[in-house]
Image (cartoon, rainbow, N blue to C red):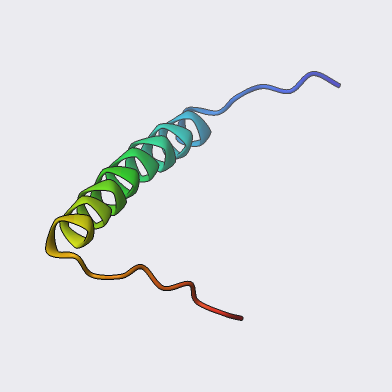
Length: 46
């Protein structure tokens, strides 16, 4: 059986990749801001 990529699957994959990049940029910005202000980083324990 051959897998055929549907247009909506390609769209969702591209959207997920774009959202991931945006989130990574926000995380990097917040880490930089915390480092500048001297806020200690804390780990969240689950």
